[in-house]
Image (cartoon, rainbow, N blue to C red):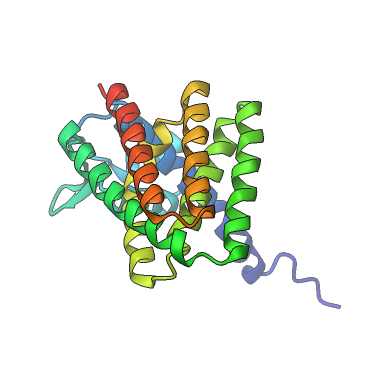
Length: 228
């Protein structure tokens, strides 16, 4: 029988997941440095320099730069390439304001439209997040937090709102990640989630709206206090 373990097809298939991991790690590192002000606005993100820095080929670097542009942390400028965007306090407030409106609307609809199974899934996830909070695992909480808000978006059963919410969440993801770095903030976030879950379980649209707005304000406050 022919051994195809070293065939080109097998090699390319194995390389793709590794490349995605590389690009995700590169994007996360650059995001953190941009938000912390370590990479200044107007800085050109040179592909060749980044390939040397991270010890990878140009493909994962290009994918990472594409992710930064999608999240509005950088922009493509003709003849200059990818350049870091200026992140002002006003811009961050605008994004959180928009996200607050969308999530509040989604919370109201989810409180009315979520199935029993969806409500149970949200409650179970919040219970697991309580355990993660006790363990102090910021990375695990960040992942679960993204899932928590995605469940609420999908609980609207409205494809257009889901798409719009996902787009805004993508842009805000680096900032929401940055505000979940302390045990105190994680504990407060999980407490706020509890109020949101209770409103949705009680089928109380007005309370779901209110608690999600307060949750986004709390997150924005944390981000703004950390901005240089």
